[in-house]
Image 1 (cartoon, rainbow, N blue to C red):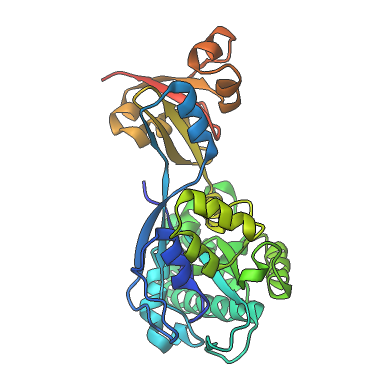
Image 2: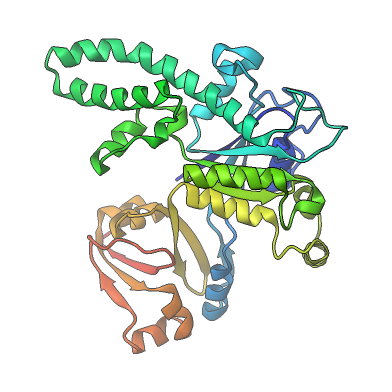
Length: 365
């Protein structure tokens, strides 16, 4: 099960520096000129979760396996991308393939790093990129809507439903609003997602600040945070330069360095968790002496679907799930203690898995 967050933004905002830190590689070029990243770089990172270590310590697990999330470093967008400027068509196609957008914004002054539009205005940069995505969606939808409308008028039920969804998106886009603001019923969400709109994807704003502002942010990041709050979007303040340096340090040196910068944890940990939450994902665990492992599912999925993430046979032959809530597993020092205190439950096919559940599946082979 793969989940991809696309790192986007204007050139020279710190996307590739951030990606390098995320993947602890130098695969992405971080040069001071536009379009230094031509092909999207892809990296998988572990999702930080302190619960894994605590579970593994109780179970005396030989191995700890975290769940993972994929980040894609996409070359910088520029004004006019929707019309093909700056290799725009290729970039937009790369964005179309990801599940969520991590929008990196330049919130720092540095005369040695040029800004493609000659000014520092992160909110304006966000609007520039969003506009290009909306224009691309508008052009795509208007082209596709005409034949669907003809079919709808002829009485085709499926075409009527699809055209109604297209019309919702078109109305928003023509008002200069992203498609993710559409008011949808639960039944409409999946077919709406299948329209493949760039502005339907959830957005996380990442404020890339100078080193001195990593802990508290600055006036630029405050403006972005206000924008994010108004939109109901996520926002993380981070210094890509600090994170790149932290990524090269061993654990002991890293902790000392973070303390010197008045930081409790790497900003990347917050970014990864925010990206995970942005996709509507939760974690369940399997725990034993061999390994403690984290697994990813979408919030709201039921026990058989969770079993299927481990192996398709588990879902096909699902009988029930032995379930212990994470706090109970910790409080009663493992499975035996939880069972003795009545905290191990047997859940059936309709059980909606909760974040942190420790699960053991029973199934027919």
